[in-house]
Length: 507
Image (tube, rainbow, N blue to C red; front, side, top):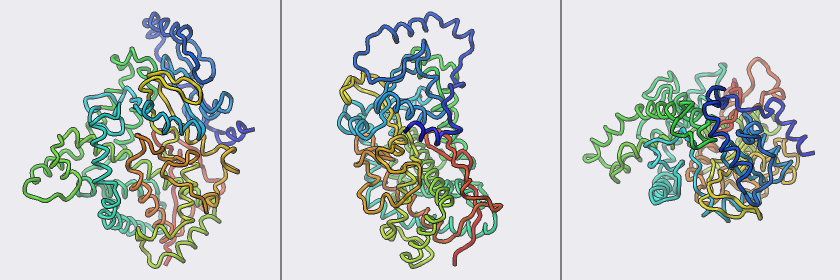
């Protein structure tokens, strides 16, 4: 049975109630009339032709069935109720799609009705009108930001212009690692720092971190970004009962805004410095272009924040998962090493050579199938009532696409829990979001990830560089077969235990 396959995967991830959402009993008593009203709405308000799903409990709905790993729990519920299910989170309706057919309708066919963004209450602030990722609607501001980023940062021309910079940061990473021979290396930290410095140079024209001493103008930036994401997406009673939003009972909105302001202070002086020099100097980095276009500091700040959060966590987690799978699967690692040995003519990866590495790219695709960085993508909201697979999606419903479940569906993938890159060789399945059984970055609708080109490019070149120059093993002669592969759910799907390795330099 398919459910049994899932149970193999979630040994230590059984869905448990959201303990964080439990409110003090006295608060519930004070708000009893409101909850009674919500109860009546859930059980007596007609919702015709909703997708099937488990019966909700009074007041909390299905919150107790979601748990700390919603990508796993909703996948199991989909096996019981179908590829399109309805859950009630408090008074909110949540629709979860877990099949390529349902994903295609939501992300493509009905995209114009379902492309609004569900924004967690913790992210509601005076910065919200300036956001690209969390823009409520695909309005004029969203379109102009998306066009600007695609043209100036993620186009083929822009990527070619940035190639020497990315190669320079790769060389610095390799040089740093060579100094760590025989020492335990935290792969996540090295990759994260490399990505931060690459993006900070593209955006601001300077490094933020130092690989060697970890002191820079953004020391602790990783922790600050993590706090924004963790508080922003933490289970929040204000999201489940919107009438309570203004109260911010758990203080998550205030906490998230404080973390955001702490991060923005990291580069405030740089923006002002670039603004002062803008008249006298030619454009040297992306922030110069934004200043020239009349962007305020708030608009620049939020765009930079979104670039760093979206462009570092996803890339870092994907590379860490890929390295973990390669360490665990020695034969696959050997094939990648042989491909690099025979097709790369130097000790340095040149981006133009990536296309010569079909097996490496198959490994990356297989990693993204098993460990998609955003297992539920980002939440959509229905702009108006529409139909999906003959079911009614009500206006205002939150919508998630469980690409983690799609990537492990045995109806789509043979032996789905096995890391088998060969399944991608000789196929046309690609990252670009056209094949709905494999959409690790979403599909080609309005909300498709605009940074896909630079993200894939970074994953390919960093992973290839790590394998080309170094022979990696687990410390203390640990058995790779027993490597801990448990997940930690968040905005990105991370390894619960960071991957730590040692290496020998390959001459």
